[in-house]
Length: 435
Image (cartoon, rainbow, N blue to C red):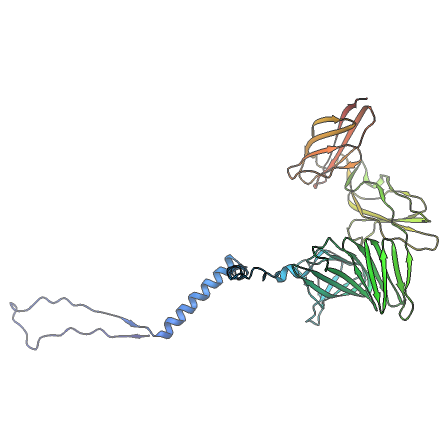
């Protein structure tokens, strides 16, 4: 950039007389000469500022623009899922869980922002467990002291293929309802691979030290391929094998159905630690004993109680106030153990030592032998009516509940509630069921 010196105005060669001298106004003019290169630099800087502003205001503007261009030229089918939509992620983490990315040589602590890709390794410690969800809804639960590899993660609008390999430990697999029949979820152990169908649950274990490997189907079905063998598995069936040995197919015990406490039930006691809590479950054919587990975590990485009994119930005391999860396994005379039952949760609260909660029964109606209760409680609260969990509580806390059919005569309906603050409430209403 250059600056031009102002031009002096012209003066006459001889000085005029005072009468002849014109009045002169002095004018100074300045200007800058700008090169094309400078203009280009300023335009480039302005363009960068605009692009940065668009990224701050609309982070995915490039995807939106590409989609609109594709639609404008008629390429409506060219709408692949974004990278975030196809990556697997952790939805539950408990204890020590580490990840080694496929392009890295170091292990890092896993967190809920960690995205998993093909080739990544996941390792859990003795107190660790992790639940991984893929974009198609398939879930792999990695148990303690387990090492797995993500072998496949190919998710598109038309199909989904997911797979993991177990080097050691145990993994539970649960599949959703897929939109495409070509989708599949696989889990490999040694030289065998289980292809699990939709709406199924399976467990795969690998113990290289004992040379023991097994695949168990708890719900649904799966096809196990090992070399030239193809074995179909349905509910409560398993295959087991050792390296170099034959594949054996057998039945397994069914897990017990849980009875009490009901799922999400609040248990109110004046002194929770001395309260005797009764757990009940259904009998399993050929079962010689049962194991009850109680944990403060959904992944059961920490157990507060583990009770072995021969019957279908157990009484437990010594629990502090709080939220708990419980399940049961069955075992036969050969020490073979079933899969875990479904998991129920309950809340143990101290009566009179917690905050109060809103619980109003606004009206009751009788429909034949069924009673309908309409009321309001706090958003997020849990309710039990005559031993039944109330499933439909609106976001604003209003609820409508229908009881099981009642015998003719007078009945007292008991409603027990608990909120997220640890508060409890109890209401009773009397009704008469006509004959």
